[in-house]
Length: 438
Figure 1 (cartoon, rainbow, N blue to C red):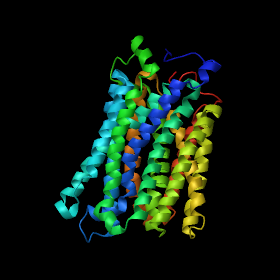
Figure 2: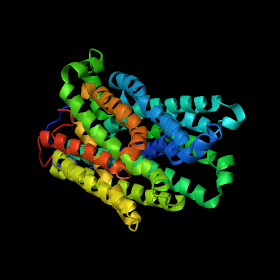
Figure 3: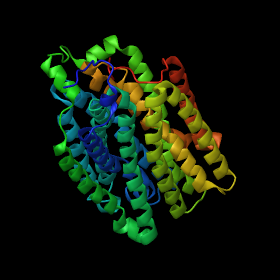
């Protein structure tokens, strides 16, 4: 049984065994299915804006209202994250890891069954909002819990790749949503999409979620938590109280890098397919094809940046990756602004650069000791994601008029510079610390 604070591992300990690879695979697959449930909403923002608000509503206003409902899912994340993290630090990681995916599957299925505005009036957007909030509660416990779970199952020198592989799995969920949405747009007309086609991704997502619940039956509790139980080293007070009292610096750093993660994912991956249609007038088929390519590149980029983090240290990798993200995002939006002649390759490049988000969980996991790791990471990540993830879609929509079509790139650049500042303040090294929480 691996101690929560282990000595420097031997070369044999550095290898990922069959059990650890199985854990990473099942965790990543389950995370992909759950994250698909959470993000497919944004890919259907345009039809939802027509269906859940009265006819005659200005398109930009209806779209802004849908983005507001999308943002509500982010605002609900701290509630789920804090509660699940509290019990995850006291009762075990696996229990909360399984509960979160169940709480995601149910509201996703129900969204696919909702009546629209033409059927029940103003109650339709209210019900959509409530179910979106429930999704936010679930994902608030899922993402930080997943990072902690995989990090505590692998040797300390492989924490970067482990967290990145889970993040890569989450991005595969985005890819599934993008591919499915693109297929629906290509195979059925707009009228059929509004009549019934929009429901398919949510109904399938509910099924995907229950498959993820079943998959997690095969996971075991983390060795780090089992060791804390055996040594009676669990938190003897509210874990979050200890985090806020003793780990303020770690919370601040984690919140800043979460902003970078949020800006990269929400703007470059989730919002760009809609923006290229509305702002740059590309057809939906091209927009979603580009997003599929970018999402695939993102999944690969997470693995590459995670491996680099184990090799060169998270600080150096974060700084280099954030600089690449800044440059690639500007290249994409400048090309869009001048006619989109190179949209697909530049979107793929930007997606790969977004893979720097694979380093972010390593920075956060290694910032907190095991006894309060779940609570510290979850609080920092979810509060920051609630603020930045919730504000980003309406903020981008509002600043497009003020700053022009490059506004999304300006926003991502600011977040990337913030990550570079955090990286400069971290101690760099070629290997991970001896323990992810030491």
